[in-house]
Amino acid sequence: MAIKNQHGQTMVEYILLLAVVVSLVLTFYNSAAYKRLFGSGGGFGVKIKKDSEFAYRHAFLFKGDGTGEADIAADNKEGAEHPSYKDTRNSGTRFFGPKDPYQ
Image (tube, rainbow, N blue to C red; front, side):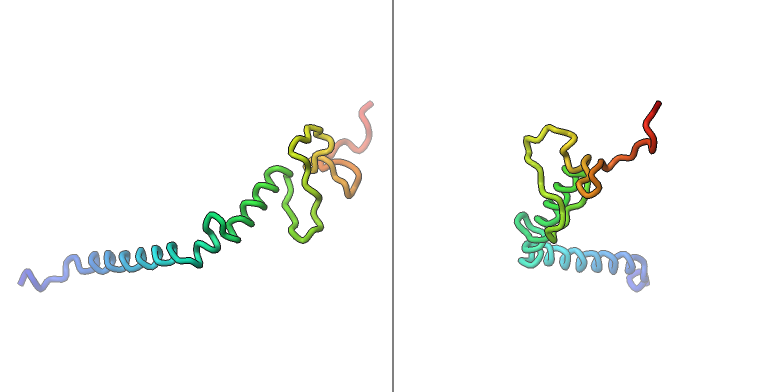
């Protein structure tokens, strides 16, 4: 009678389900399609890396359509010319200040 009880069957089913899910994930992870998108030279990963580095360096998002501001030289030390400070469209800065000068 002890052989026919159902204790532990749910645990066995969950372990088997976990094994199937892990095998599917590993199959997808090792596939050529995944490596083409997310691998070290993958198109999607390279695009995300390029956009993230640009946004970190310039404090605004990169526009890949050609309408964004040009990149600055790596040796530029002039803070007033940095794109994160200077607003070329409104000929001012990206920061706000007082409406009237202090007296």
